[in-house]
Image: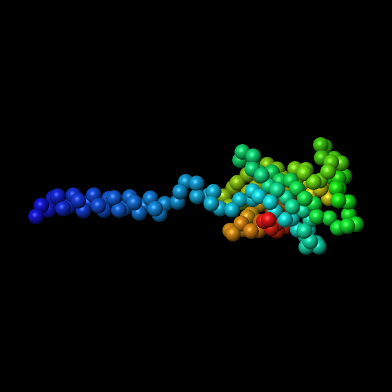
Length: 159
């Protein structure tokens, strides 16, 4: 028997197996892309009434997200095309439907934050954090002033 040759083959086989197994077990560099993102259409629900308010479409532009209501869900006694009467600047007295209400949001691990969200009812602009659920069917939308502790969270539902 040629022991040096057997030893060499065994070492080569072990090295090949180790390399193959580590390549299978290692996460791919883009494994974060498999996590649910906020991109898509969402049903926004009113905090107080628990009734649907709008369908919001969130799109990605480069590394940031922005969102606009593409459909408003209104009661028969409500104006079907409300204007943002309490908004300032370019949004003042503009139709809420189609208006950019969410902007500048960037990925930060499992969360998306760093952007802003507009409440067209009050005209107030808040910082925002988006946290999609693991299954991607719901998303926590947290609007806040200063730090996230001082804010309010809504749950949006994927359409």
